[in-house]
Length: 120
Length: 380
Image (cartoon, rainbow over all chains, first blue to last red; front, side, top):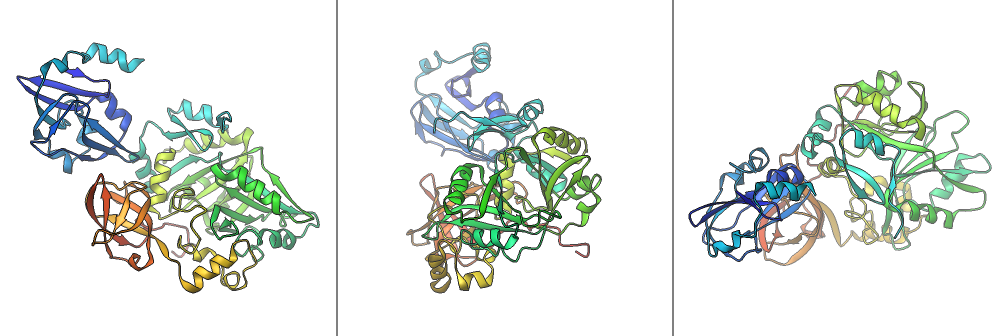
């Protein structure tokens, strides 16, 4: 699993990347009450707004951590957004993307580096 | 505003209890504690929640001649509520208005009930407005009336259905105090001004207590299992569900109390007689009805509609804007309030909210979202 500086995680299987937010980010956001997911087949460039996650207090954008096309979304979050708090790095995944440029993964942090990043 | 950020006397207490501190109205305040906004909110509606509201401004208006009527007559030139008829120990909600009838701030005004001090008027104003409010009072003061800003008192609130059980363990009188009344009295050896009021829609108290006693009083309340600390995050969702206005958002200098639906806070003879700053515009809005009205808004989906969200009619024309919006934990879904052109303000009117560029269905609803639970006497 790799992490971005925007506190997303990305798990790659072949050319498909699953994307979610880190345990740290879920904790910082607090109680999540709504998740807006992209449409399947939507195309994003790295850094585009891809989804929205809302806590009781505020809305936060989720950026596409890599460029690619959405192949699946976690529809269960629409009725159970609290899953993002309960299991942010498992059942609380947001969407899956077909990678356009796997080299974009190179600059991402591994778990150890991310741990250091959030400690700073 | 390069002023240094201030701390209330409970700062260390908040940190000790794991608060996440954020800047708010010039103070470092607890936005949430380890329980989190959602659980804090739900706890306050089920048990009792303890809030630090010491950032708010407190003051006395006192006449040199020792007559309540003199101080009341002065204050009535600045607020639309009936101050003169306040009985000792009685409290009312009102607003400071500008000459155009816009709201400078909203406040609580009460007449002290303490023997020998019944001519003192006590005001509590919003933190973000307090310097301007006190300057506004000073500017209009008439001869023989003085403003005394309280610099040595903190302010806390204990709110929720169990608040009366907790407070009455130390102060039996608290149990049957009427809503919007106050006492100046000792609570467990600590002198305080306690009023039965709040900002959550629940039964509860606001307690002004000396800086030197406030930590002890908070520890005392917190020693009860039914009491949890509540931060600004839940304070906001609680008041929004209760349909209460937040100054700077739901009311400001561009809104009149009539547009804001606060006519209930202006007693009948004052509506007719005027005699307060901004009366002309208030009377005009009463007579002609205001061009827009504050309404409750129920988004029909799950997406919260935040402040600033454009409200449209079903033809796609802009008719207003959301001034407070979020998720209501007790309501179990999104809640909002805002202003719309008057003809769209009737309950059940279908409207749409423009959220991230997409029109989402919503309807106009009566406030509050969660029924008020104020103490109305033993027979309730």
